[in-house]
Image (cartoon, rainbow, N blue to C red; front, side, top):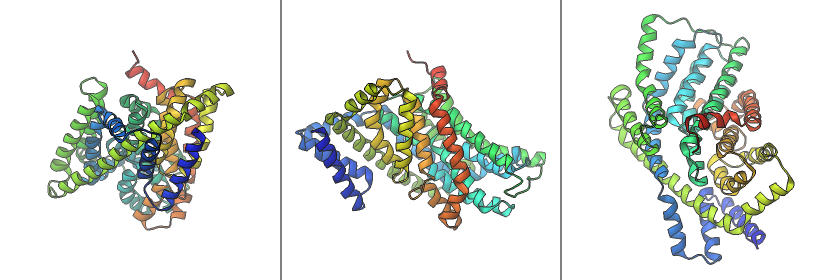
Length: 430
């Protein structure tokens, strides 16, 4: 019976996708239809949705999104980039190093890979090309570095994973810190070693006045992740309070320091945040219904039993999942992957002893790779659109960084402590 329902569900999903319906709406509608077909009442489905929407973590989402939208549109990226140049721009490959540093900092404020690619791509790539860097390297570096937006906290995919799998979102945030910093360091080492081959001379050493002016201008933006993450992990605020505080500080920073002459744009930022929040709510509704239907089919239990009976070690299971996720990433975008994978796999990893934080980081790194994987890779198209160059040229530029990220994925998969150590130290389980 489970196999029949799964086959029928798969056929319906394929047909709706072929008609161009967004995948999260496809999965929501399909799951609802199958729950009704199995005898669950409309009232029961509505109550199930309300129970899952009644989540303190979900209340934080609109405020994290508002902070991200304000930071992206408020001119923060340029301030961070100019400050980073004063610190490391004079090194070999300094402009590339500064771009990586600024992108990592912007990711810690923004939480979105595509938004980071748009903001940093329009700023960093033209300057790198002007200073003599090869266009392919400049675009590849920026597109790849922008993926840090979903690994370094706060991260929207981590929030979605936490909501769907019902695990601690603050712990998931912490799990991404060490791998995110490691990814940034790997990119920086590559840029430093390749400085003589990709063009671009070091920037001149800044004067004391330039150094102070650039860093003072960036200081207000840097307070945002410090307040959000410091307050959250210092025990001063809850996740929701941290999100509200971050949105409020972002609004003040943008109005006072980066956009005092453009207050009329603030309304548009609020509208965009509301629009993105509505999408997240629909995704959470779809995920809750899909999870309910998948559990009724018995697929997670069957899969867990199969894995246990096969004698697979946790690392072997994760390697198999990596192959599946890499293939999915070529055809689906990140939210769709989360919606499909998490409801099925979350019960399995609990049974075989894989920490949720470890699996979440492995999943997010795979989604990072999906952002650079043709034919769907969003960052490839964003970078092509921002720079006006063909997607094929962007793709060639990302290949070295894609390989570095594959290495990071293998390292994180085989060394769980990279993602579980910091959560265990800062938020030990009772």
